[in-house]
Length: 215
Image (cartoon, rainbow, N blue to C red; front, side, top):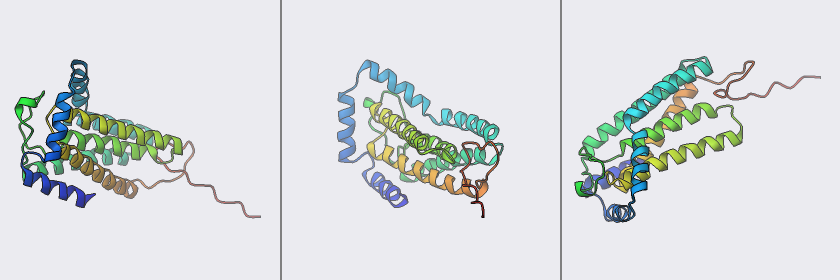
């Protein structure tokens, strides 16, 4: 994932203003715009904004602290989002790729474009929260969590393309960076909050089978 992310960053830097595939996808999105779709896209993209993600991370940290009776899961959630956002901001400055033309942007964005901060933050936050809740959950619950992460990430990524503020390369790069952040957060979570057994196990803990009884 890291190699793919660095490779896309190099492609975005070299292209400067989108590759041929980026332009083809943007043209398709612009051609298929509609009033209702635009309203929905603006609402979804605002929900996935960095400010919204920061507020949701703080809320998630408090709820996880109350549910898991430990500050570690909440701290990991906030740190995962913070790290992903910081790396995204630094990468934008280094790659310095240009946004799509202002004439096709439905929401004006002027800062460097690679990677998408909206996609990075959404996947980082929703993904690490899913990891916390998935510890000790059933297989069906874990599948549901994965589905929620995919829907949220793809939804935000699609709106960024539809609104004409990002290239396809940007949202893929954001997905890779967000995924890397979730992996890092998972390692930190396993280190800071190892699973254990207690009565009334919470969903943030993994089940451990009881020791077999000796004859």
